[in-house]
Amino acid sequence: MINFMRKVHLKIFLVCVLAAPLLLAASVAWAQGTQSGWKPTEGAAPAKQLITIDIPTVKFTDILMKEESQGDKTVKTLYVPWLAQYLSGVYKYAVQIAGLIAAVMMIIGGVLYLTAGGDAGKVSRGKEKINDAVLGLMLVLGTYMVLNVINPDLVSMQGTLVVSVSKKQYPPNTAAITPEVEQITGATALSGDVKVPSGDNIFGQGKNKVPKELEAKVQAAAQILKAQGCAMVITDGYRSVDQQVSIIRGHCNNPPGACNGCNAKPGQTIACTLCGMKAASCPHTTGKALDVWGAKLAKNKDGFEDPFKGEKWHIACPTEAKCKVQDPCTSAAWKAMRDSGFCLWSGEAWHFEVQPGVSSGCS
Image 1 (cartoon, rainbow, N blue to C red):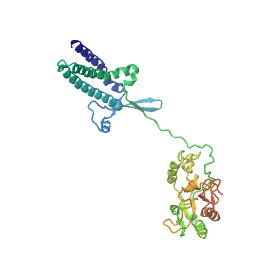
Image 2: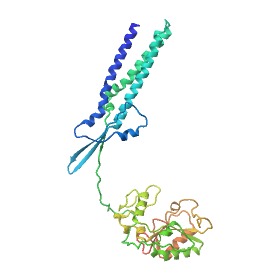
Image 3: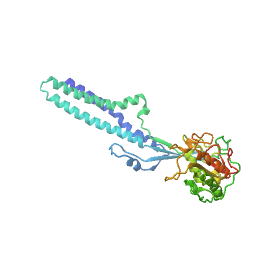
Image 4: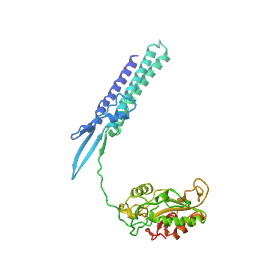
């Protein structure tokens, strides 16, 4: 029994030796922040609000900031210790829980050992519980030592440095225009005033965006279509610069104002990118373009049949040359619009511009 207790005492001593480095770890996360030049900028309240479970060993301190001059600009650096302090606190709390469990197991083992009454089985089980508890605690505490030997950075608990990034303005890209871009040939904007064309076969939200200068031509085309049992579906017309910018952001990888094309996102059609952020650089913002489809008239809630049977129209019929479905009313719309003074842009099966077209490839 004396030899066994000596072994237990030796193991407990080793546990204390292993626990000593933890006292050093507590100050590591703050070491970065206590260097000269750092000033507190924000309290720890925001970090506390993120924690839903109160852990006694987790203590947050202020965010620190340092300003340094680099040439003609000042660079600000923030030191955020919260993550390091959280991980350090959780580890300490885990060690305390492990120590409590180990103590309980040692007590249970000690009771078994002392009350064995000569029963070799109980004596053995008591010794095993005590040994297992001490060894488990040594393993928990020894983890820090092992990681420190492998790489001290694994246990250094450094905070996060955030360096400010200054915004730099770049001039619009004036590189050569790619073939996908609607090339504008000196267009001038119309008045921007709109007028809803009359006609019981004209549908679509775009009929409220028809510039007043185009109303008569649209009505003429609609009458031609009506004689063939077809509806005119206007999906878009005049756009403000803000509306065009919104479309560019949804359709293009290149930003508004780019002069090197749209670089369309997957599944999206291309859009005019307002080269140099000038309204006169895009057909719709000049008030000279309409998006128009033809469809068979029908007595339903829409007033017309779906010419492409549920498939997205711009996918079923991307251009005049690549239209998958030869719908008679779609073809009729192309001819009626052309006969009424419009041209069809070769890049889209629905994009019409009043003659002379402002985009290259409009015929």
